[in-house]
Length: 365
Image (cartoon, rainbow, N blue to C red; front, side, top):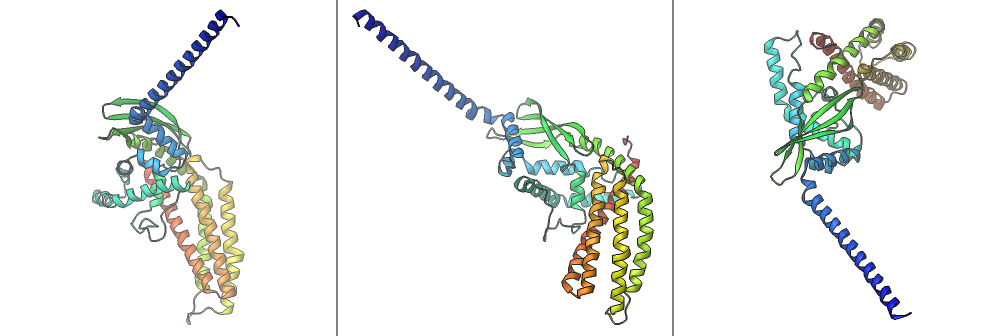
């Protein structure tokens, strides 16, 4: 290779190395700039906090969710929106009684909001809606209210996230649009999430600005469907109740005893009543109810009726087994199931009463 050719080869090598070095520096610069932007700017924006919240929901990450959502403030505001006019249209209540109820709901607000926080976090952690149990004061009606019914009315369990909308900034606050759909009635809605910036420059979702508007749109739609479902099933329920009342009276007559113990004849007749009449009547009633078309907004009520029927049948089956085998544990199981059934039946009665009262609400379609 002559000297000229050698020099050209060296020049090409130097040029290639220069370009490679330049590209490397540009790449490093881009990475550094992106890191500065991400860690110094982006993570201190409401967009980042909102995206992290959505990721936490998708990944069932309760820890990350709490970092970007002010659950204390959010549940407190939601509770106020949910209960502010809970009795406004109940003509059966006097003004004095309404005031007492309103004071009662203010008094139990800390327990309910704390329970709501635990329910939400449990949903993320366990990927399931877990109701209070054990000695929790929100279990059943120990606190004087039906927590599960209140949870249902919040629409929390039947609202599905669809996507994010626009975000508007205003100093240390921002409003983010969240597109959702209510599952029962398939009603779309745009929730407005108010976000606040902390002194440290980090953002959190504080509360839902138009949550009450969402409830005001969804509740009447559900109430109408429930009212239609109740009307469509009224004859079935009335006929079944008349039959159950007769069976209940016969059951009372058969269980009467002066000694406190049932005779073998009584046990045999009670078993026959339960197995040959009561349980078949329950199954027949549920079969007729299942044949009725259920309006989407009445799905919850229809499901409660199914649960009531299933638990009642199990109750009587354990009771029959207890009579046949004389096992106290079977009586205890039957009693536990009976309490669950009564709890569900009370919930059903509340829904039916509330639906009747809601006919006075002016914005029902």
